[in-house]
Image 1 (tube, rainbow, N blue to C red):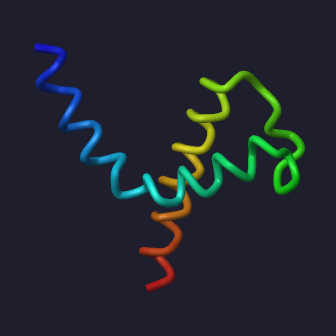
Image 2 (image 1 turned 90 degrees about the horizontal axis):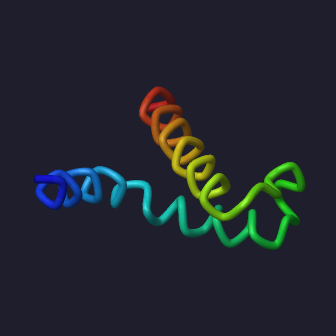
Length: 62
């Protein structure tokens, strides 16, 4: 059952995958966001939330 829900969630995140990956690399180095120094899982979650908010802002700008 869980495996069926995984693909659905992944497809939703794929939309922000490009942003998440780019921001993830920057956060890892800590140049862009020095405050983003928590463990990998936390940084990934933050990146996902930021990506969603960013995409929402873009849609609002349009």
